[in-house]
Length: 613
Ligand code: M6R
Image (cartoon, rainbow, N blue to C red; front, side):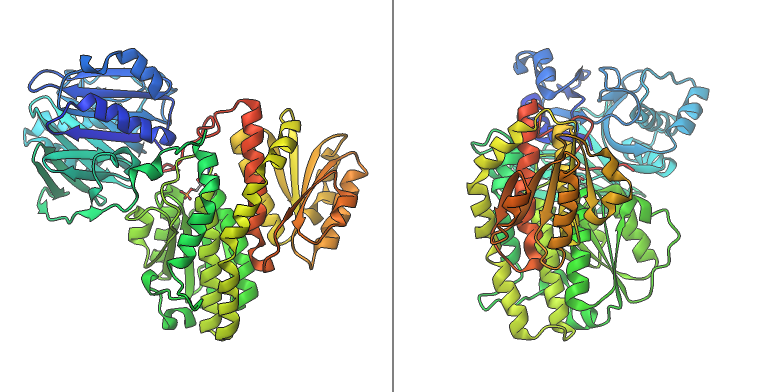
């Protein structure tokens, strides 16, 4: 949600900032801006509504902005509409402090009123202007320097944020602080970089420091210092980012989403291999989980948002079936505000690609406060959820740039499968041999995903027929219903076509009244125990005019007598069919979006990482 970039060093800042913002555009893209300082001169600030390309057009030749110290921001509006005025950077009335901000200041109105009483005027509707001016207020009132002013402001505000500031009195320096929103500091020789997300600086360095909550940093050429909230120095260690810059580029594909769909075989394979050996034995030691921990679990609570929640729905079926442990799945934003009891000996599993989703992070904290153990399944190393959980299973999807998740989702599925198999083995529900056979089958998924991708033109042809659809329904039972939830989300978020996922048996309790001539209904049928039931529901839909797409497993050829269009996925163990069935649905979403001319990597109103409630 919003992107921050900063640079101070020997090179010109503007090209580095614009390049970094372009890489971060997936985090927010309704307006953008940069501020660059040349020595003691006042900063040059340029802001524009729209995409980074619009900002670049406004700037013209990048050499026109001179200076080796600067900050930049790409915005996803929370307070105040997308506009040049509300775009960052924001500044104090006399330009003593200028800054950019990610996240939300919850008590900004109270702060604005206080500052107004002290003579401040406000030009924007943003909460960012309030925090910049609050820092300015403390800076001038106490005269104790930037760090003290920032720490006083941090103690006064509520919310989650990452802040990056320049002070008129401190040329060639950038100050930053964070609480809740991600921020990293990169180092390359004497050059220092700030970024809210790794891809922004990957072209310049892979060596980064992580700033923790309620910590600050002070950067100038050749020096990076860290402080706690009391302004006491902190010692931090450099971490190496293993993602390479190429992984965050489009690599010949028209869109990141298509590239990431095609990266699924490798991402799934890497994730499986990260915890298994050649003999198909699982080793969870990298997560921190021990056999004793696993044996002590009485309940599992799975929490996530959006697609991560859909992974949780799949995981619930798989865990319960393989281990017999009762599993509850919760949407993080609901769970965090409900007074629901969390039983002792519960393992809370928090699923999150970014590891920064505000609601998931708060849900994790709620579980920790309740005294239960937490396991994070995250893709971003060093992210907040990863750092706060007791155990971490890192998925190896690599950087995911498209707003609609595909490869991260697929890696989360297999991460849960692996956990379920190992839990079942450790607790005696599966023999060693049975567990190894399941792992062996899991290892066939990358090839099977590839086979589905190789046939993508058929899906493209079918999707193009439904580019003008107003509604699409997805129906299925059990694990297939969970797949439908994800397929439906992919469709609506990428193509703006209204779609709904229904447990097939629920249709006749009301929703079937929406079915009329020509409406596309996609029936997912991979579970032998319920396939006949779902097929009956599809027939009911067809007799009311629905146009049927049947998504089923190779061998179920009677589907051709029922559905108008069939997609067959390779056979696998039925616990794992979601990993295959989701692929045609991702492709459907992508191709319908393409046919409708939607910006598939950056659909309207969305951002990659939802770091606000
Ligand atoms: O980073 P997270 O996995 O925590 O993100 C959760 C959701 O915001 C995310 O899955 C979202 O639903 C995607 N747009 C789905 O494609």
